[in-house]
Length: 446
Image 1 (cartoon, rainbow, N blue to C red):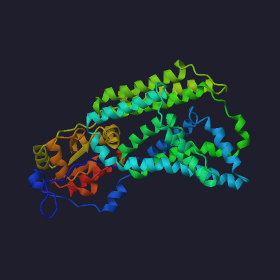
Image 2 (cartoon, rainbow, N blue to C red):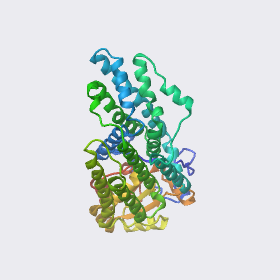
Image 3 (tube, rainbow, N blue to C red):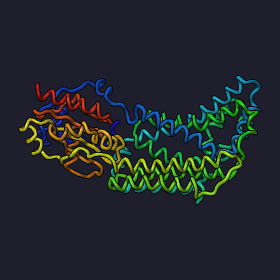
C-alpha cells in the first residue's frame, strides 16, 4: 500500500482537475481504471508469503516473550489462577479464552492506533532528524533489554494492573493488563514494533500484527492452563531468561538498523544490517555465558548463533551476487518530449528509501533480468526520489500527477498519454510487472 506523503494538490482548474499545462506536463490522459479494478491490483503492504512469514515470525516472537524474566515467573501464578476459578474443563476453556481476548484487545488497539498515524509517519520519515530519532529510541530500548536500565511505569498504574478481580472479569482483566505488569520486558519490544507498524500505515496490518503477537504471547499460557498438572515440567527460572531478553534486544537493534537505511548508501545499509546479524549471532551463540538447568539450552544457543550468522551471510551475499538493475533517468520535460518523438513509452517511478514496498520494487522487480532487458531498448525509465521533502520540483510533479503516496509507478504510452489503468501503488512481482510493460507496448503498436 502506498504510504501517504501529505502533500497538497495545487495545480487544479475550477472543475477540480489537475492543470497539466500549468504544471508543464502532458495534457493527454488515457483510460482510467475503476476503483474496484485498482483495488484488485493492490495486494497491500504485506501480501502472499511475505505476509505469512512475517506473521509467523511475530507469533514466534510473542511466544519467546513468555521466556523473559518479567513474564516467565507469571506463568505458574496465571495457571494457578485459572485452576482456582474453574470447576470443570469447559469453565477452564472460558477463562483461557477471555484471558487471550483481553490480551489481544489491548495489543490490537495499540497496533490499529499506531497504523492510523501511518500517513503522518510516512511524511515524517522524510526527515533525517526523525529517522535518527527513531533509530536512537530503538537503540535505547534495546539497552534496556540488555540490562543497562529498567523501564518502569508509575507505581499507581502498576498497582491498578496488579489488582485481582473475581470471576470471568478477573481473567479478562489479567489479560488486559499483562502488558503493564510485564512492561520492563515487553515494553521496549512492543514500542519498537509499534514504530514499525506506524510506518506501514495500514490499520488492518496493525491489527493483524498485534493480534498475532497476542496469540503468541497468550497461547502457551492457555495450553498450560488446560494441562495445569504438567506445570512442574517447565524449566526452572535462571540465566537463560536473561539470554532470551538479550535476544529481543538484538531484534530491536536490527529494527534500528532498518530505520536508518535511508540515510546510508545501499552498500552501507546492507553492511550495517549484516553486521548487526553477525554480532548478534556471535554474542548470543558463544560470547554470552548464560546457562540453564535443562539440556536443550546448550543446543539452542549455538543454533540461534548459526542462524543469525547465516542471515548475515545471505544478506551480504545476495547484495554482492545480484545482477545490474534498471538504468534510471532524472525527470525532465525535454526527456518526455524526446520519448514521444521517438515513439517510446515512459515509466515514472515515484519512490522513497524509507518506503518498504519501494525498496522491494528496487531490489526485486527492477533487478529482474526480464524487466531490465525490456527497459534497455523499449522504454524510458524515470525515477523521482521523494526520500527527502522540500523539493519544489518534486511537489509540482506530485500535484500534477496526483500522487497520493509512495510507491507510485506511472505508465505513459508513446503518444504521451498516461495509462491510468496500469498505475501501480504497491509492490508488484517481476512477472506481473512485465505483463504491464507488454500491455503498454501493445498500446503503442495499436
